[in-house]
Length: 112
Image: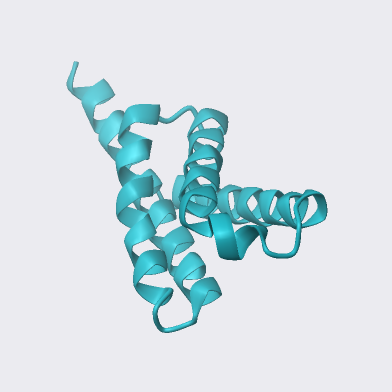
């Protein structure tokens, strides 16, 4: 695993999710997330993951798979009413996935 990329991915993803969350809170009504969170959350997560992958020059298709897998902890946290803990776990899982992608890319580049 490329720890540098994993760390950078975690920071970028966390900041992107936080910034987009603040923006959505600022421009939507109070009940927006109650009514629309089921699709707005995953869509925002994917948008942030694609941004992170683009910044780090990682393959976006593979990053999308990692974003979907990383979203599982967040989905599991919802019924327990610990959404932000789930989001934190998702950021960690996604960051680790990105570190793996970077390592795999480096290994395949050396194999050629």
